[in-house]
Structure formats: C-alpha cells, structure tokens
Image (cartoon, rainbow, N blue to C red):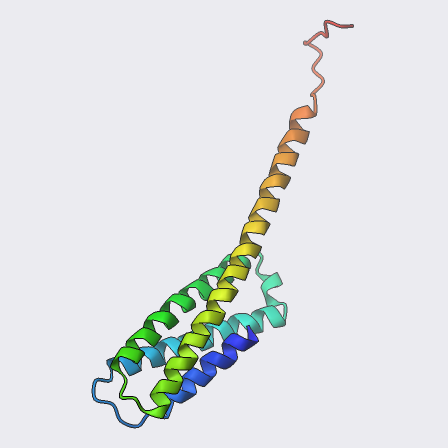
Length: 151
C-alpha cells in the first residue's frame, strides 16, 4: 500500500501544480480520483497499521480492501485516459498522466493480491463449515425409543 500511496500523492501533487486549463473537466476528475484514492487508502492503511480493524469484526476487511483497490484501479485508469486525451502537453499534465497509469498498475496488482486473500479466506471458511457439518452429522443422539438391530 505504501507504493500506491506514494504514486497517488505524486499524481495529486502534479495535477495541483497546473495553473491554467481550458477544458478543466478532465483535470478536475483526475484531481478528485487521485485525492479520493489517497484519502480512502490512507484511512485503510492507518486502520490496518494500528490494528483498529480487529475492534470491528462485523466488517469483512479483506473484502473492503478488495473493493477499495478494485474501484481505485478502475477510476484511476479512466481518469488517466481522460487526462491523457484532454491535456495540453504541459510537463505537469504529462507527469500526472504517467503517475496515474503507474498508480493504476500498482492498484491492479494490489487488487489481485486482495482477491487472492479474500478467496483463500472464503475457501478456508467453506471447508471448516463442511468439516463442522460432517462432525455434527456423525454425532448420534442416544434415544431410548430406537433399538439397535445389531445388538
């Protein structure tokens, strides 16, 4: 997550150094995406670093991380494509596009890792539920009204 934070911050700084724009929609969208990704990912990083996520077990934190990285990948890609198409070829805009695509790549890698962790956790939960069900089905309740035939 540290590389993602650094890339998102760098992209945000690059976009903030632009002083003039003619159609500003692409620039504003990129600014919104980079700032939002930075804030949400930073909040999750803080929660995980301080182990505060263990105090709220009702939330599936692996799924939360997967959704965050997946949405950030998607929106960083869209914002980078839009800014690349609508930029004025200034140094700051080109740098923002480059860092936007780098952030997209790192977010995509983190999405893959989060997906693997989430699917592994789900499969282990399913296998433990299967083992628990098999164990419970083997436990025979002794009922006196039922007679064993082999006795």
